[in-house]
Length: 250
Image 1 (spheres, helix red, strand yellow):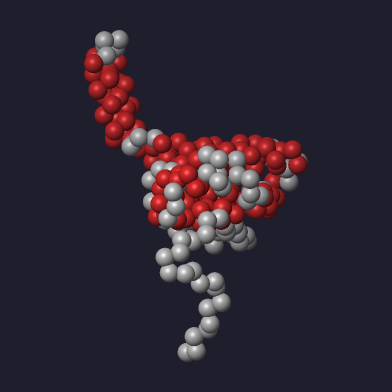
Image 2: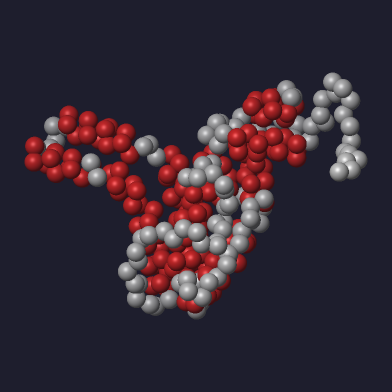
């Protein structure tokens, strides 16, 4: 195979890369993708581009501006698509889309506040998708805007909670300890409350499905239709991508 010539500019030996806003953002995105839980700092990004931290302040006045730029890049590069199937209800489509979107958002807790207020028009494709999904309801424009906003805030809100919430077993341990040492409750009350606390892990597992059920029921109510009983089972394998595509599992 004939090797194609490399037309990219060559950097002299020992010569540092010329800094630019795009280069810095690219490095920061790489750090977040490599370890989404690691705090993204000016110093860590400066180390990644081989520059002094002060050099980055020529392009970003503070860390918030850097994180906003990283969130902009994330949303700009997102793939958004949906395939409608004749045998799939709008409820099933919406449920799958919301679940996968949650799975894609959750790994990046430090970017969530910036993704919500991104300066990129990445939310427009989601409006187009949800408009098509909700078309069978024949909602008014006002109600359709409300339904789309409800879906978006549900996804981001739940992703934010899931990202910062302590593990359910740890929560149970802490609440149990507080309950056992409380003098405000008698033995019968402690037993009753304790049995509910013990069910928190199961509640956490069921929470997002329940929230989705409630969201779908609220949208159905906007359409003036009785809310059917939803199974709560997430259909996997649908040819539908979420608002935020992410190969990493939840």
